[in-house]
Length: 289
Ligand SMILES: Cc1cc2nc3c(=O)[nH]c(=O)nc-3n(C[C@H](O)[C@H](O)[C@H](O)COP(=O)(O)OP(=O)(O)OC[C@H]3O[C@@H](n4cnc5c(N)ncnc54)[C@H](O)[C@@H]3O)c2cc1C
Image (cartoon, rainbow, N blue to C red):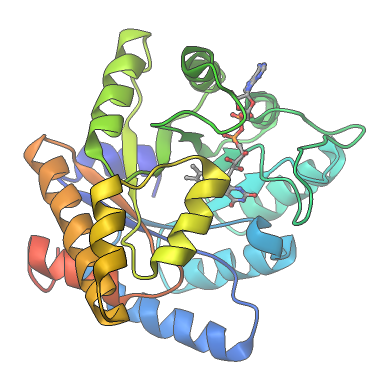
């Protein structure tokens, strides 16, 4: 099903992000965790592409396997290291396999590199990928949005205009980068609406279960963790206490988003399930139909 239709029809859309596992054990764990999360009837499951050093083929294979389980898949696709011809082949592959939804991204620079370098015959920006896809293929397409601004662009208003450009080129929905203070999200949505971005904007939630790990992510992507949350977590005497605080914080964020009438929540699962399960159980009970 097209994500844009799911977002229109369902009173609440819960979705999960997974990345391609590197080992057989991780793969087994991923599918067990996915099985546990299915209880909340996800509107879609998204699969990252080439992020964190994983291979593109593994992403496509995982997208197909999850689709074969009867789940609605959003396959991420990036411009990294790919010519137009290679992107066209990937798009044909996805279409042939009945994958209807994409997240069209520029992509992160490969591991060890700081700067994004387009390949000859490829694209520099996600909006160009959007333009390219819309010429020939009929996918429902999401794009990335940054409540605190994209790390490479100090001009937040320009960054938002570039999000508008992606929507003008045919994006059907936006999934946000993770954030830990809802005020960034509400402000982002208000500013987006004010410049005419009308498509659904889905908040991205990541429960902190390991402070150091999430601090590393946030340094890379430019999101911030509230000072008082860091201080409370640093005072915690045990990793379990950090986990509990992280889950409680993400639950509070989700509760507040729902109270503000937000109708979709996207969880960055890191291929795990327990923290997301704890939040959803508290929020919605043990299942969602
Ligand atoms: C929900 C989500 C999922 C993600 N999944 C993946 C994944 O699977 N694989 C992966 O590698 N990465 C992933 N990322 C990370 C993403 O690829 C990076 O954040 C990347 O640095 C930017 O991608 P983008 O699509 O937002 O790029 P763009 O929208 O192209 O923006 C990139 C930068 O260029 C600027 N810009 C845009 N258009 C213009 C223009 N016309 N002129 C000048 N400047 C411009 C923007 O302000 C921004 O600073 C994900 C991010 C999010 C939020």
